[in-house]
Length: 323
Image 1 (cartoon, rainbow, N blue to C red):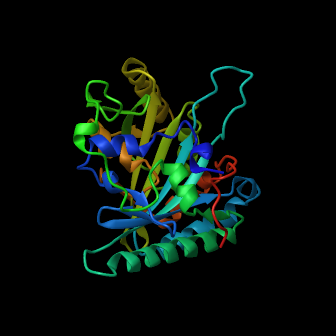
Image 2 (tube, rainbow, N blue to C red):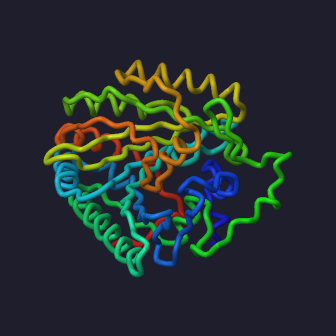
């Protein structure tokens, strides 16, 4: 099955923005033949949760497993939740309800062999996390090259050349147009909000996350986790929403802001830069916004238990190899 035939139509194609926003780290994104995402000055590896097994987990065991993952976390980790758009007609089958991804990010240097060592370190960290979560009935699959290419809409091979600027039809604006806090990606518009005021109580954090994830329309939600001191991590929580027109996108932004407020979260008052915001909610491990708050491991583990249990069915062709 070819990558094009299994690509999910609701996932924006990164290649569209790569052509018009060369200054962003995502512009150099490619997937190599070992299932590693090559970024500018870094590498990432991704795993997808198995939702059927996750539905059978117990909260106590899952929370303990997440706490162990977080306590032994040596670098950046991202948890991404994606929900597709609703079907246009009732007789259409509803696509995957939600999909959940885990991304390990590892910086790399310019000297020879650095990228290979960074890729090895990132894969080791991800496989260690997957192994710990598997013991709590939260199994995940490390995505291979074909799955990553389908997921991200980027070419396999880091040497894939970007088309020259002269070949881009700026009159037709095929994508990447940025104005007023939104970005055009493919045939949709996207905008990102940052969510703040995270609670320190684990049960309250879990309740708020469950409420936030109950938002009924299409979204990409990213939790960026970075160790800051023993027992504490900095958490950046970002949510990207989509709409077919700028006017509808403004309505969707208002709706999701009201929804977040209703479940107890606050929205960062400043307008988020559109391209860095969108990139920060892709499963790349890149936090370009750096808007975060320190949270204890125990409180965060309770919230992640709720997040990781929301996965939808993994589609054929997007699974990776099971370690």
